[in-house]
View 1 (cartoon, rainbow, N blue to C red):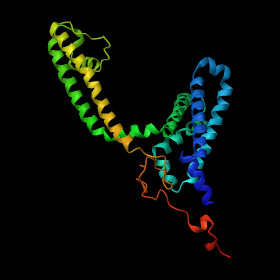
View 2 (spheres, rainbow, N blue to C red; view 1 turned 90 degrees about the vertical axis):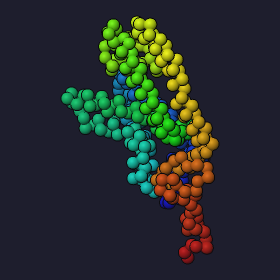
View 3 (tube, rainbow, N blue to C red; view 1 turned 60 degrees about the vertical axis):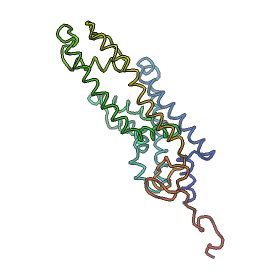
View 4 (cartoon, helix red, strand yellow; view 1 turned 180 degrees about the vertical axis):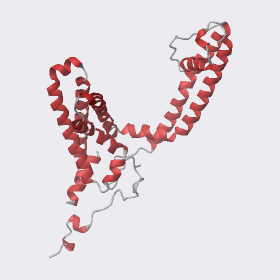
Length: 284
């Protein structure tokens, strides 16, 4: 039984084997089709004409994801650790809203049902685990979070300074800069190069400051991109493999790792002689 569980865990949680890759491809197709059904069902014309078909497909996908979730819990050593993980929560939301809608019937719960139906689009997040680059991006963002926080803090300070200055320049004659918060809103829209155009400076000094902020905006946008790119190159250098922990299902282990970064379990533990069927240890 343990060998069957280990084989199932390898197929479900890892993609290094042909069976694992085939399972991942099938699951990705199911995820995409289920999300398409949710989106088509939100179109009133299609829902009125094919509502029953969408309903049947939705329950079919719900059962598929429910069975998948149960198999994940069965084949892993520490199912509670998987349940509390990010992907465990995402997998739970893949089928839970549809099941909960059974208990929310009647006109008075219509809004609740709509909310539960919308939550089903969380299934698309299940695809992230099958894209190797997603893990690299997550590692890069985590490693650069402090630099990005400092950058955002400095940017907000600049926006407050420019907004306050524009209030002094334009506030008395331009109703768009009637207060400092309004001026800061304009500074945010201008510095991020969005430029809605609902508030514009009319004085020469104000237009000069606006031009300066626009030019600075391009440079400000490039800074976080450079920070993340640097960390992304570093994460790519120590690119993780697809090996998952047999105890807690943790992913993202480096190629040199022998033990799980979360629970410390041996990633490449050998089966016991009895499990491998060693005749020397069999009992007569």
